[in-house]
Amino acid sequence: MISPEEIASNLQQQRQRIKDAATRAGRDPTDIRLIAVSKYQPADAIEAAYQAGHRDFGENYAQEIVQKSLELSHLKDLRFHMIGHLQTNKVKKIISKFNAIHTVSSLKLVEELNRRSAISQSDKAQAPLAVMIEVNLSGEPQKKGCQAKDAATLVAAIQASPALQLSGLMTMPAAHPDPEASRPIFEELTRLRDQLGGRQSLPRLSMGMSRDAEVAIACGSTDLRIGTAIFGSRPPREKS
Ligand SMILES: *Cc1c(COP(=O)(O)O)cnc(C)c1O
Image: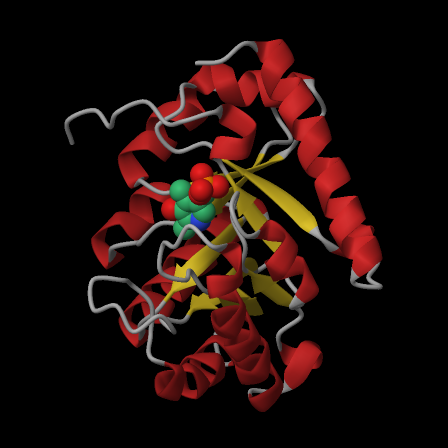
């Protein structure tokens, strides 16, 4: 793990980067949320970012989030975002750990999230769980996410789920060294949002990572998922 000072300074740089890109795009930077992607990083790295004032973190794996939320239970106002593929049979285990799920891509998952969220709400009188629909626009078969043509069905299902709050759309372009390669994908997600009811029904767009944040902001992103530019390169994944 890199030092807490480096993490604090990287966060500062990323906030500035967002401000600059928002200004160039004629947008209000406070409309854009920075999600620090902490997958494979130790709980100490999250704590360092927390001490630097950061609250929103992205995690990809059920096992990791369970472990980290135990280690970080003393930090009360942490907000975790699920940004990895979520299996239906893992929902029960992880639902209480997350403030938002960015990766809803099937009706089965909508049903299970609604069912489990309703149960945990009756315990704690929480607000509905914020969810986004992950759309696969890159055409890569190994990528998760629904097809664009199936998004409307998921929108309707989430809107009909009392324990869920439809928050927006998420996408992840194919990895490419040139950030401009992401632009057509980001523009397509924005177009899809407009077709599905616009900002009224889908206020948030989760798109943009370390390499293509500026392009994402120019295309309307409200949720940047940034890992390596904050925490440095990821340690090799432990055996799962
Ligand atoms: C790992 C990950 C990121 C962060 O990628 P960086 O290149 O490290 O910024 C963003 N989104 C998703 C879905 C990820 O899995």
